[in-house]
Amino acid sequence: MDSKTAMGSEPHGSPVRPDFERIALLLQGGGALGAYQGGVYQALAEAELRPHWVAGISIGAINAALIAGNPPGQRVERLRTFWETITEGPLGIRQLIPGDIKNDLVHQFINQSRAMAALLWGAPGFFKPRIPPPIFAPASSPGNLSFYDVSPLKSLLERLVDFDLVNSGAMRLSVGATQVKTGNLIIFDSAERKLGPEHIIASGSLPPGFPATEIDGEFYWDGGVVSNTPLQWVFDATPRQDTLAFQIDLWSARGEMPRDMIEVDTRLKDIRYSSRTRLGTDQFRKTQALRRAAAKLLSEMPEELRHTREAEMLAAEADDKVYNIIQMIYRARVYEGASKDYEFSRRTMEEHWASGYRDMTRTLAYPEVLQRPTSPDGVFTFDLKHKSGE
Image 1 (tube, rainbow, N blue to C red):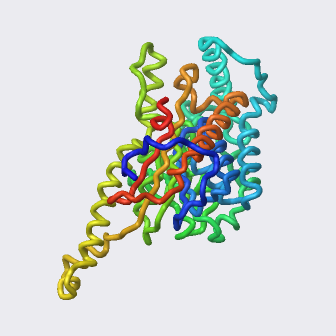
Image 2 (cartoon, rainbow, N blue to C red):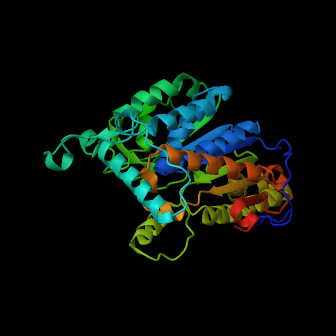
């Protein structure tokens, strides 16, 4: 199998069990777009592909906690409960869902009006406007410096996530947040510390909408301020293992040239928050090729050379593990516009969920997705959009 994205085989409907030591699910941040990840997980669950490690940023951290913090049979249900709760509509009144909308301009107007509703009234169980707005208030504590109050999210997470299960070691959970004072990305990992609702909320504390979250005397903002994808953490973790990684992105680094000011704003947002997954995987492929070359060289090295300082340095980095990186990137419709990450309507949530479910179902129909790579670098990447020619 060529280490580049495969283009040759046709899909079929009977995927084989993957021969990997670890399945990792990597969830990017993207606000309301995160419902796409819920649909993705539903398709994985139906295929009985349960991750050993789930890692996320921002809304990806919330979805990750809902997965890690529930037994397998309840995960999709809890994901649905979360997304249905926060898209109930302002003042507890579900927004009306019109029939099929044929005109993109009409659809854009409806989406923009729903996004405006979220700005004015918040999202139930997620965030609510801070009154009075902090812009009119004197200097205050970091936990109050935001336009919205996220205390409803803490209550919802405590209701839907079993943090005893999160910390039991049944599934590894990692979330990233930005330490405000240092500007460094900090990884909160259940393999290294006990996690609670505050770690999940910290990962999504995007200013100025949401306040910094305090943990052990330090304040944290959204992890996406520094890096909007957990891809590199998983690949750098030790001990290394043969890994089948599903990288679920909500922003596309690639797109069309904008034609108006709305599209300029939308394109800028896509570029700013995209994870550059392809760049990251290309760099990882080069690194892994060097690691495998070092492992082969060490295996053929005379005994007296293996104990030199240089050989020991190589040994610390060498390995012969293999990696399948399955890239899925949500492509927003034209009518979604720049407000797509805070448009919390039920109709749009269902569209995102269905899109994620459909994309993952189609991805799993290709046999090479679950097969071990045989290329010299031991890395295989797959992108459904390239595969299907879309």
